Length: 213
Image (cartoon, rainbow, N blue to C red; front, side, top):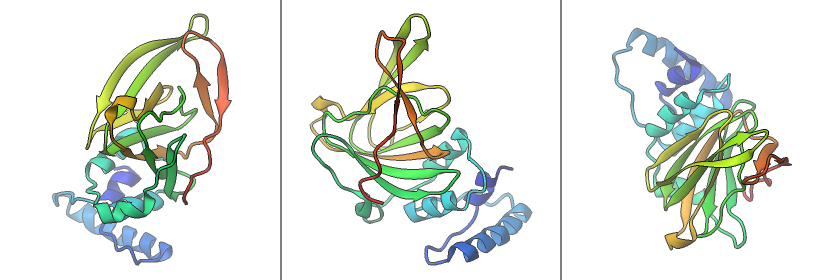
C-alpha cells in the first residue's frame, strides 16, 4: 500500500500541529491496517491539504486522481483562495512541500496557459466551477509540434497530465463565465518547457509566483 493510499484512510483535525498530525497519521495507519474493510470516507478541502502536507514521497498521478475524487469542496473552504485579475489568470497557493503542491487557479473568459509540458512533474486538474478547454499536442524533433486532441470539461471534471504530456488549458472566450480549477502537482512545478504549433523550438518558462500564498 502506498503512503498516499494509507494517508487517505486517516482522520484529520485542522487544528492539529504538523508534528502531532504525523503521529495521528501513524496511529490511524496502524488501526486501518487492522480494519481494511472500513470504507473510505469523503475528504474536505482542509483534509485534502493535510493529506498532501503529510506526504513523504511524490504521489503518483493515479493516487492524486483518487484523492481528488474523494474530496468534497465547500464554497466557504475555497473562498479564501479566490480572486481574479485582468490580463492573466490568478494562481493561489494552498499548500506546498518538497513532494507536492496544490493551487487554486481563477480564470476570466479568454485566459489560458501557453502550450507547455510540466518538465518532470505530473498533475491533476479538477474543475470546481466553469468550463475548461484542454488541447493536447504531439512533438517531433524534426516536424515540430502538432495538434493531437481537444476536450471540454465542466463542473466536477477531472483531467491529468503525465510525463511527457504537452497541453494548453484555459477558459474559452465563448464560455461567458469565470472558471475555478484546483491543481495538484507532484513534485511542485519548476521551470516548464513551452512550445509553438508547427515549430520544433522549445523555450523555457517559469510560472509566476502565486498571486496569493
